[in-house]
Image 1 (spheres, rainbow, N blue to C red):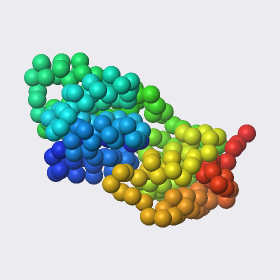
Image 2: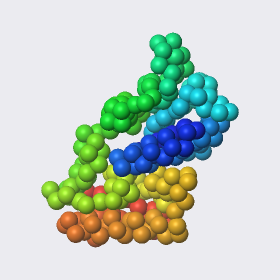
Image 3: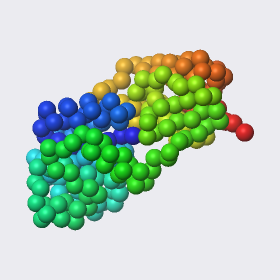
Amino acid sequence: MKILLAEDDCCVAQSLTAALAEQHYQVDVATDGQKGWEFVKAFSYDLLLLDVTLPKLDGINLCQQLRSQGYRMPVMMLTARDTAADKVTGLDAGADDYVVKPYNLQELSARIRALLRRGSNPLSTVLEWGNLQVDPNLCQAVYEEKPLSLTPKEYRLLELLVRSGHRVLSRSAILENLWSFDEPPTEGAVKALVKRLRQKLKSAGASNDFLDTVYGFGYRLKAYS
């Protein structure tokens, strides 16, 4: 799952990004509202976290702009403004939730999961592909009842492949979903990631071609009957 965090406080942005990364979310950070708007136009996000008091384009106006342009992804406002009037303004602007700073990280995480479940791509309880089970809520994967010990990026790639079904996942799609804007991958990073994931699946009993390479196009999981 990919999240855009629009936050101009560097310390808050860094700490929240680190906390979300531990929960296997991929996070891009925009330090002002205009950059947030440009990120949304350039990339696809599952959730937006918007500070209300952003420079250049504040969170309220950014949210209104997003909704007026047809963007329907969930939006959560993060702000120190805690009056009822402020909350009404944020929700009327198109936000799906309104969280007052300072927030409890566990509660914020639960609210994020709730919004993602209600979004256009809701989280399933367990995703299955043949003998493989992937649990998005726990960020865990099991093959033939054997738990897979995966790094965050390995897990996100596996979940992305399962969600893609029979479609071939291109390298560019993998790069966009697994690496943040500020974290450009090194050459061959996707190939190396696929190799590591394939080895871990094989160690759990999967065939060598369970994670299949479609030469010239990308990758997909082997079809099963």
